[in-house]
Length: 320
Length: 245
Ligand SMILES: Cc1cc2nc3c(=O)[nH]c(=O)nc-3n(C[C@H](O)[C@H](O)[C@H](O)COP(=O)(O)OP(=O)(O)OC[C@H]3O[C@@H](n4cnc5c(N)ncnc54)[C@H](O)[C@@H]3O)c2cc1C
Ligand SMILES: Nc1ncnc2c1ncn2[C@@H]1O[C@H](COP(=O)(O)O)[C@@H](O)[C@H]1O
Image (tube, rainbow over all chains, first blue to last red):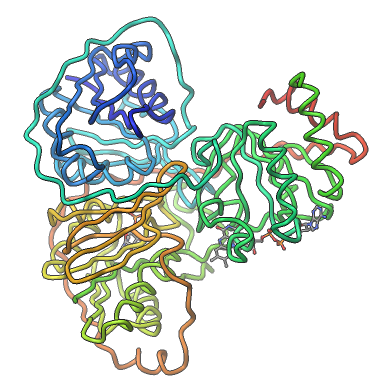
């Protein structure tokens, strides 16, 4: 019996979210007294044996010409074959772009109950219950999975990566692979160096910035912090910033360690996408802005004056 | 082309989130219900746009829910769509919903859903439905073009976007970018009253999960304000106290 973790990769690089999922899955294995195993689909440039440092004992590696493009229908059948071989009782995905397509499919294929967006380890003392975010971060729910096999997708940034000693045995896995129906015809990077949903630090600005021409100072602060950029919805709607930077109830939901909100009022729909951030800093000239109620730190003042000063102070702390 | 759009109802985005019955149920008293924004703005409107480009297209809407979902499905019909089906059972979890929809979803070329509901944040029904129908599935889709039986789709991935090509029939989970939000006009609202809304009884489907308890997050300790004249102090706090960079 095992806990099987799906390791997600992009262009051969294992995503940060997968290291979280590996740590999380290995902990569930430890808790339930079974082994942790992982599955990697497609060619990777990284050393898979090294994934053992998160506690997985075995890595099944499936490679096939038909697996070059991400195709949830084809991948699902492959993962189900590995799950069967591994004797998986729990299968863990990241609740990211790949996991959202795969976890529900794999769950149906294995007649397993799914909890998506888990935020903590399952409680296995009495049945099997998992805590997840609901109402866009405004509440938590405890969900019981009643099937024999269970599928969990773990929220990005919800579980701290642990790195210890250990190497995993890497096992090539020969699967029956269908011909894909998906063809990738183009792929573009839309954001800066740091992907918004994976970022530790996010710098975000709203209508208080007055116009797109003023984003340079926001970008400079983000650059200094190694942060991803985000914005409120009206900013994306007005095409000041690309729509993929829009965070909130109807945009991207994020949970970074640090979220800096500049010139954003803090409407409930905006908060819904960012309230899982560990530390929230609000810069707003209006002391009554609702965002201050959700903030950990704040400055009441003019963004145009304050942003360059923050950038300078961060530079100093970092010794640049 | 035959399109099926999956419609769900959710509490208004500003609704107060509270629970009753020993924290086992969402407190519905006084809550305004709306069409799930992803279903309305992106899935349904994109279907309407496709029909406007090709008049031979038909759009059916489906919802899994009790009679309390009727006003929501009528509102969806006021935006567009030819007829609606309501599968009469409480939508208690994703698998149950997907399995019910799968019963009526055969024979459509395109099935559009929202990428997730804003209440239970499952992002699961689309993938489950696709697996039940053994169809290709793309979610977090920001654009969808159809030419004959070929679909070209953009989907958002971590830090980027991918353009994919696949064939119909197809299941797509829609998000921002897919279409421009619309509001229903008077003609649509009048027409919606006479559009067919078929109620079908649900099949017996076993649920795989059960919500047992809800909790509100712990209250924040309160904001620590730093003077605008002392920006360096804020940076020091973030570095030394919160240790977030
Ligand atoms: C169904 C629905 C879904 C929605 N989904 C989302 C969503 O996903 N994400 C989202 O963001 N919004 C969403 N909204 C919109 C949301 O309700 C707010 O309208 C929006 O978040 C406001 O954006 P904002 O804070 O940038 O602008 P505003 O509300 O205009 O606030 C601008 C802020 O900047 C401050 N300011 C002005 N000048 C300065 C200055 N020089 N220095 C410092 N501060 C300054 C002002 O005091 C003010 O607080 C949604 C709305 C609805 C109805
Ligand atoms: N009760 C329901 N009836 C019909 N469609 C639904 C229902 N619940 C969810 N959906 C569809 O599935 C999508 C994803 O929902 P979920 O997986 O619950 O987050 C929604 O955006 C809807 O398009």
